[in-house]
Image (tube, rainbow, N blue to C red; front, side):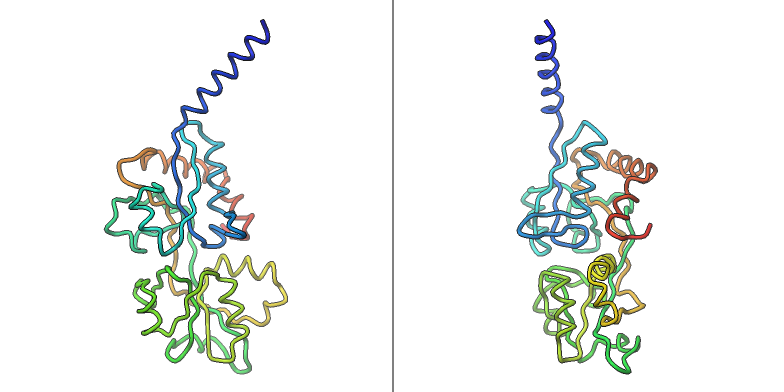
Length: 251
C-alpha cells in the first residue's frame, strides 16, 4: 500500500515538473554577468536563473549562450525570449521587446597603465590613443554604434572578446593605449589580481552609466508584470543583494 502511494506521489510530482513552461534566457560573455570558460557559462545571470527556478513553479528558465554580435539574430530566430543585464538603447529599439524594471546600476570606465606623470587628464581625450574594447558592445563615446569597421576607423579601437585580455594588452603595450571595461568586472579582476592594482590607472569618469534591465519579448509568458513581480520579490527578500555581494558589487 505504502509503495503504491509513493508511486502515485512520484507520478503527480512528475506531472507538476512537466507542466512548467520552459523559458529560454539568452546571454553572451559579459563578465561578471556571464562568464565563459572552456565553453561553460557561469556568472550572475546563471545564478539568478537558478534562484528564479527555485522561487516559483510555473516556469523553468533555461540559459542559451549567444554572442554580443549575434544576440539580435538569435533573438529574431526565437532561440530565446528574454535576456538579462541589457539596455534597450543597445540596438534593441526596433525589436518587439520590452524592458523590465531596473535590476542593477553600473557603468563602464577607462583604464590605462600607470606611468610617471600620468593622471586623470590622460582620459580627457581619446585622440591618437589605441582603445581596446569588446566586439559587439555599444559605447557612448562612439554614439552606441557597434560596427567594427566604424569603431576601428574613427576611434582606433582594437576589438576582442575578453575584458581580461584587453586589460593585459594595455599593461603590455608600448603605445598610448587604454581599455574600456565594466567597473564590476574591473573590481572582480583586481580582487583576484591585487598585485596589478598599483599598475592600473582607472578613470574617475564613466563612459556610460548602466541601467540594467531584463528585456522580454512582447506577447510571451511570463508577462512583464509577472517578471517585475519576481524581481521585486527577490529585491525585497535580499536575494539579489546576496548575488551582488558574491561578485563584489556594492548595493
